[in-house]
Amino acid sequence: MSLKDRLLNDMKESMKNKDKDRLSVIRMARAAILNAEKEKMRELEEGEVIEVLAREVKQRKESLPEFEKGNRPDLVEKIQREIDVLMEYLPKQLTETEIEDIVRQTIMELGANSLKDMGKVMGKLMPQLKGRADGSLVNKIVKQLLQ
Image 1 (cartoon, rainbow, N blue to C red):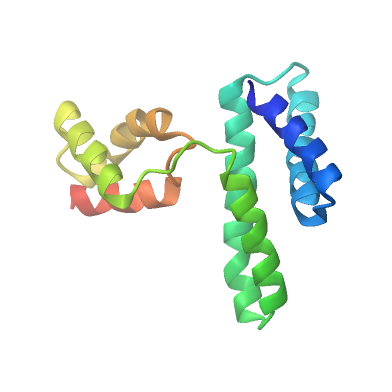
Image 2 (cartoon, rainbow, N blue to C red; image 1 turned 90 degrees about the horizontal axis):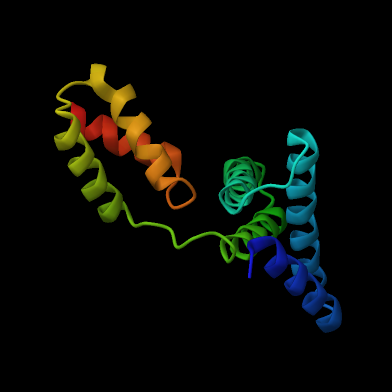
């Protein structure tokens, strides 16, 4: 079953169960996918759907600190629930240790030894880790290991 079909089935299930919060998040995700399809003027492949969902998660994670600073625990909780629902549709996220191992291996393969090689390393890593790791975390680990 494709990710889009799964979202559709879960949306129907949420309607039946009257789970308004989950329904709202799934509808938002489907709308984001539809917008991306309209933009590209074709149906998205599975990997592209994952990218759209990962982008939605990233946007929410970036807004969390602002709501925390603004002393809005209600919005923090709502955004966190949205992230939790969206994460169910993304591939299992890699741990920091797993990312570090992959980064070390890639650095050795490429023979990278300074921050000047960061572009090469990131270019090779990101297609491998797409949807399974946060880009900023990967960037941070690559910087640490190349210094």
